Length: 165
Image (cartoon, rainbow, N blue to C red; front, side, top):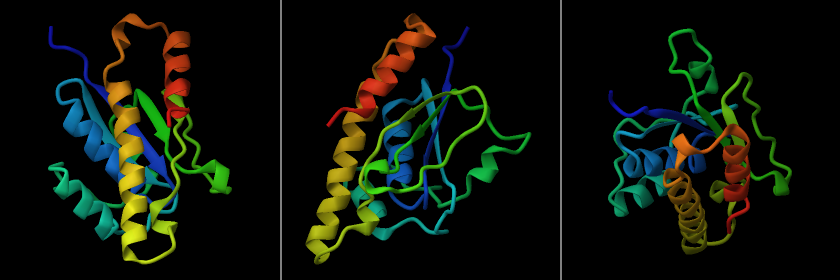
């Protein structure tokens, strides 16, 4: 019997940077174990160019990445999610989307690099900082022994990862 593939949906507001980077990172780290998706509650309709450049520079696939509404994942023919992870930054009073249903969920707040001020170098650094934090958290997640953890232990681990700096 082939190993189970877990579907993971990363959510943020605009689906132009953080959730997109998360989707690309987990799909690269977890082939055959995870299938990642991303969406936003109010998508911008385009992936931020700095996010695409950063992913490409780190040799992560960008083909097929697009800014989309979470409505796509509410359709009857949509993949059933095992995990839903929000990456918006509640500390900055950003409104995070909520996901109904029964998947395991967690909040991994990351400052929105799209909102970073300063010159181009400072804005690019904000994208790099966000990607490094996401990569660290996703690496921890991708290495969890999911099959060996009960729901309570798994939820504890998901929450702990969200506090990882």
